[in-house]
Amino acid sequence: MPLNENQDSDVPKSHPRYLSLKYRHTIIEGMRNLIVAEAGLIAHGRGECFDYILGEQTSQSAKNAVKAAVAALIIADKPVISVNGNVAALVPEELVNLSKLLDIPLEINLFYRKEGRIEAIENVLKNAGATDIKGVNEETMIELEGLESNRRKVDFIGKADVVMVPLEDGDRTEALKKLNKKVIAVDLNPLSRTALWADITIVDNIIRVVPLMIEIAKELKKLKKKSLEKILDDFDNKKNILDSLDLIIKYIQQQKVDAFKILK
Ligand code: ATP
Ligand code: MG
Image 1 (spheres, rainbow, N blue to C red):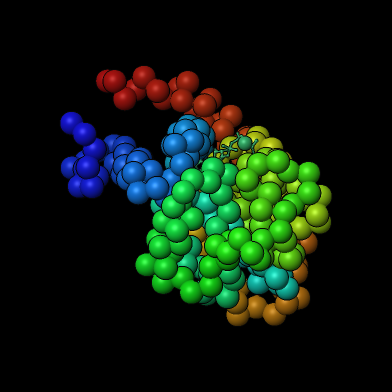
Image 2 (cartoon, rainbow, N blue to C red):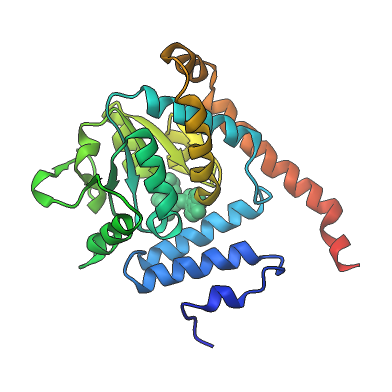
């Protein structure tokens, strides 16, 4: 049966993999509507695999990284959130809410450019209520040095001091770091080059991360700059990544005990 718009509602909520299937269909629909690139489907699958061995839940180390990320975004002079097709398809409303809550622009920044994709993503964000969208006007764009992919073209990211890059490619994270930007990554793979290059690496699913960021932003907005700086000083990204790896190791070790029990 071909997939159609209604198929996610065909998956019963009681299905043990309901959420995973629902987001799979969201991504496929996104591809049909030009929002997601074909390669975005594969990137999503890689993410799913890591989510699986992280227990499909937000860990304490991811929560700590989210707190540090929100503090960094509030303290920043010129923060920006980079948006690609997968993120626009999965969490458009949440992303726009976060951007408005913290008064941070969204910049559409794609690896795979195709006729009509920027417009499709712009429309999704506008429909979700976005008013400040960068990366849509070629005339104001500059090129990042040392990068050959399409992602070298940036708009406000070129001027920003803190850049949040959900589901980013390692080459561009490296290029942003070389330009002395503070990079916040959301990446389910704690060993990707992006995860390792970033200053703050949130090892969790973007679907859970953005709502949590909104919740934490409401709290941290009330704090003084000094308290926010302390949150950042206390955060250790290397330890955070190592803790995420330990979680994966523990999860797999536990599965050696539990995996066959579900058959009984
Ligand atoms: P890198 O270039 O940083 O070394 P990569 O080449 O392995 O990474 P890319 O395709 O460049 O992978 O980036 C996509 C990344 O996004 C992958 O690491 C994947 O695990 C992650 N990812 C995919 N879906 C999600 C999601 N929903 N939430 C968080 N991360 C995700
Ligand atoms: Mg890559």
